[in-house]
Amino acid sequence: MNNTPQYQCPLCKNVLSFNERTFSCVNNHCFDLAKEGYVNLLPVQFKHSKEPGDNKAMVNARRAFLDKGYYQPLVNQLISLYQKFGNLSGNVFDAGCGEGFYTHQHKHPDNCVYGIDIAKEAVKKAAKRYRDCHFSVGTLSQLPFNDNHFDWIVSIYAPILEAEFTRVLKENGYLLTVTPAKLHLTQLKQKIYHEAKEHDIEKEPIEHLTLIHQENISYSMALESGEDVLNLLSMTPFAFKASEDVKQQLNKTNNFICQADFQIRLYKK
Image 1 (cartoon, one colour):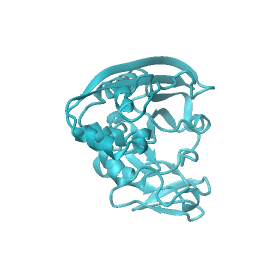
Image 2 (image 1 turned 60 degrees about the vertical axis):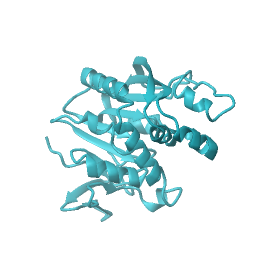
Image 3 (image 1 turned 90 degrees about the vertical axis):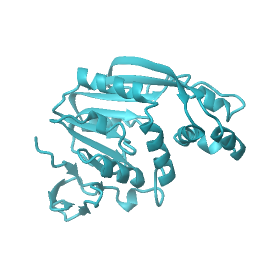
């Protein structure tokens, strides 16, 4: 299959053509391919801050944690669902791809896999490591793709924007979402909050696509080192609530037992 990525100009919505190392449209809007292999499709006027998304330290921490295999049961189930329901020669999109850990797991010899994230540092790392996937900096609220482009979209702990995801999803295509289930990281939260509340799983983020499969993946993780615990903490919204004393305590902890609890939902258009 043609492995040249197919993008839409984020400024005028015309098709972007690729020539040597530049994507350009008929209106001469140009976007250069970076040396790491990604393209920045986030115009400055779409930014809400100078460097939106995760910073370099957060990206490095997430990569270090995920590389240890603590979330492997989740990965195994995501790929199992893709192989069962997906078109293995179609277009795959990881919405909010981060450093590409989940993105590249979906790559097959015949498919075309894309990842987009608003964090430039994350996309840079993804493109440098996973050369067989297409990565770009962009915003999920205005995706640089034509309508009906993807057979399979995956959203893992990222904002779920139903209208835009549905626009770029083909008829009979699938959207797979992963969100925290009730007990996700309870033990870590208990170190930070006086009252660690369960995650609310009642509200479904998708209203107009058809839910065809739903399941929980729940298991205990034994985090080997304090570094692993801090890396996990840095991946969470409550990292900013943790005091320095708590962080120092966690850093001295070995074999910290923490619950992983994921909610998986698969929708069809």
